[in-house]
Length: 93
Image (cartoon, rainbow, N blue to C red; front, side, top):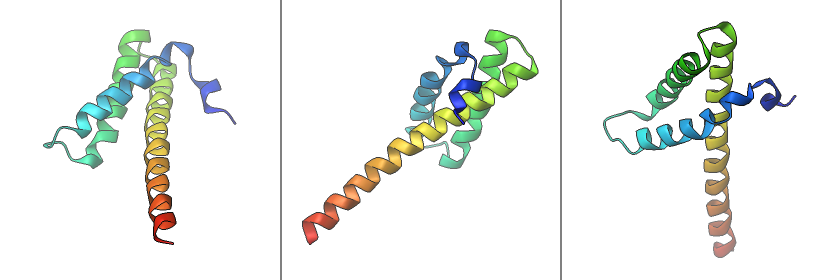
């Protein structure tokens, strides 16, 4: 199942915007990490509803866009960490 097939094309621009918002929030020391996903979730639904009309489809697409943005960020983050760990292991052995 390809999640992007369910996402309205108008929301594709929202995903990088959510990445930027998430990065900015991550750099803000007063905001706990656990709240970032909830802020992105609310922003995604809010921006989607304002931009494309408040409807069930807008809410669902906002949820999917937030999910893709957070999942994509975690994939990159975990991959980078895995590469660093593998390099350390290779250098030790």
